[in-house]
Every structure is written in C-alpha cells, then in structure tokens.
Amino acid sequence: MKYPPFCPNKLCEKHTLIHRERNWYIRSGYYQTAISGSIKRYKCRLCGMRFSDQSFSINYAARRKLSYDYILKQLKSAAGIRDIARDLKVSPTTIQNRISRLSRQALAIHAGLKGSIRLNEDLVADGFESFVVSQYFPNNINLLAGKDSQYLYSFDYAHISRKGRMTDYQKRRNQEMRDKTTGKISITKSFSNICKEIDLLLEKGTREHTVLFTDEKPQYPAVLALCKFSRPLSHVKINSKLPRSLSNDLFSVNYLDREIRKDNANHVRETVQFSRNVNNVMERLAVYGLYHNYIKPYRINSPGNKVHAEVAGIDRKRIDSELKTLFTSRRFYTRILRLSGKEMRTWFRGFSTPGKIGYEYVPGYAAG
Image (cartoon, rainbow, N blue to C red; front, side, top):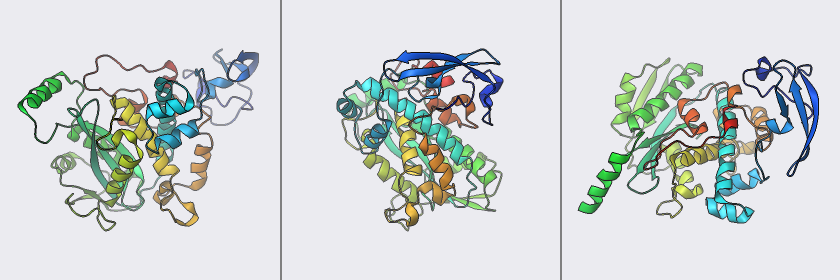
C-alpha cells in the first residue's frame, strides 16, 4: 500500500474519503512484526488516531498468514474444515476464523456490486433443506435467483420442524429439543426478508412487469399478499415434483440447490461433516455465493468466459476490480453502502444456534 486510503476511525470525517487525498495524515514511523516484517505507521491529523498499513489488511490482528485463495478453492470443492486445517497445519478454529474474514469480504463485495444491477429478468425463489447440530433441527434456506442468469441475489435462513416417521422416543426427544430452542426464524419471516430484497430490485429495475416463480409452499402467497411492491409483480406457483430440467421455470434454484449440495461439505446429504453452528452455515454460504456469482463461469463453454453476475448486468471491470483485492484489502463495515438484515446478522454472527446458550464471539475489528 503506497498510502492509506482513509482514516480507520469510524467517527472521523476522513473515514468516508472518496477522493485520494494525502494531506489528512502524517507518517509516524515503523514497527516490526513476525509475519509481515516492517510495517508503516500513520497518524490522522483530524482525530489523532494512530494506525498502520495492517489496519487495511484482511490479515489485521491475525498471527499467521494463510492462503485465502486455497481456502476458497477447498471450500467450494466440498472440503471439510478439519481437512483444510490438516493441509495447512493449523487448528480448525483458525480455518473458521479465516472463513469468517472471507465471508465479510464476500458480503461487502456482493452488496456493492448488487447495488449496480438494473433488474432485467424474472426472479425465482425457493428453499433447500439441510440441518444444523442434529437432524432434530432441520432448516430451510430460501434462495432468490435470476431466472435467466442464475445469479444468487439473496438467501435467508429459517427453522423448520423435523419431518418423516419417528418412534415415540424420537417424538418426545424432538419436542424437548424444540422447547429449548430460542431465536426461531420461520419460513414466513425468512421469505418476508426475501421480499424486501425483491422490492429493492424492482425499484431499480428496468421492467414494467416482473414475474416471481416459486414452488407451492403455502407461506409464499400469504406473505406476497401482504407486500406492497414498488412495481408490478406476478406470482406463479410451480409444482416442485416436476422434472428439474432446463425447461422448468424453477431451474435457477434447482440448479443452485444441486450445486450447493455438491460443492459444500456441510450440505451433502447423509454426511458426517454437518454444520454445528447457524452462523457458520451463513458465512460459508456467503463465501460460496461470491464464488458462484463472480468467479464461476455461467456455462462451461460460455462466450468470453462470462460469469453469472455479468449475465445479470454487472460490468466485468467492476467485478475484476473488486476481486483483485479480495484476498488483501480489508472491507470496513462502516463504509458499506447497504447490507440487508440477513447480511448484517451474518456479518456480526447474530443467528441463534439450537441448543447453544450465550452470544457468539465477534472480534472488535468487525465493527470497523
């Protein structure tokens, strides 16, 4: 870094610098670190805060450098946390810390790039089911995608009841565990959050009329009936038992469902690598969403190697500019233009995990 881009103090007027000024700080020497060598220090002329080059690094407050590129490639290849930890000779906790850092990078990049989209396609919404902690705690993660681009606009988490046959003991055990669960999020509440995202897309869109395709869950029409959208939106229900082919109007979410189950170890069916924490689920999905939208080709033989975000209408230069600093430049929460409620909860690990008591640990720098 040649010079600091802004003051890290969120209360300072220079924290929201847009133009690259150089007269707002003074150099304040160096300090030595074991992992990065000599680091430049600075002082803000306005607020007096001292900071360094490391304040703007994704490795801020980290005691060891690891390859984020390698971690991302392993995550999208169905590798488990312990497997990655063994490869890099670190603890699983260290890998989870790096995934948390990557997820915040992903959330910030997605929020910035998604804001530039002028919706020019119909939308598809549906959920895929998994579980956390145990199969007594299944969940439904609602996905919102572009019908033509398969761009993942948003996703949200919901608790659901265990299905299928159960013995009398399993029924009693299921009721006991459900009674102890706090912070439940229903499909209705989760889909309401998705509808807020839909309204923002419609408001910025270029279409006079948009169609939303979903399956036949009864919660969807009930929520849509209460929503007032900025532009006309029609709702079309599709039977989820129809063949999951390209001609199916739910293809976008069916495709995402397949890819998430294939590429994420914690969602592979009948796996021992299931999730133990709801926040870890959301962070890992945020990282995978970044890969799916901005790195993975739209089609294997797509012309110009287009990614899903380009098909949705995002300029390739903007995508490349953001990805260039994905593994290096730390994203600051206070400089992001807009995060949805779900994205904020993911950023600050605010989801409640069934059976878990107490608050999640969130490092102080996450609020910077």
